[in-house]
Figure 1: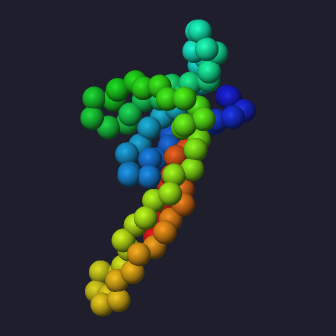
Figure 2: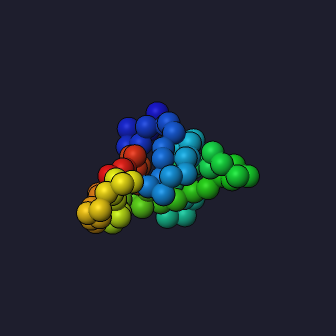
Length: 87
């Protein structure tokens, strides 16, 4: 297990799930890359810079109860790595 990123399933803030396989290094720049697999569709294998994978994303959701007359915007902050976000 990598100390910077546990090897487990993650949920993107848009709802898709991914499984982190490991952290690799770029052969020339030595930048750390997250190797992960989509758990939907064709189950593609992807890489992303570790610093990008862990960055915080600001998401603005429109949230309201189904029968509510007073609709409101709710600002939700979530990390891409731990993006189990809801209103």
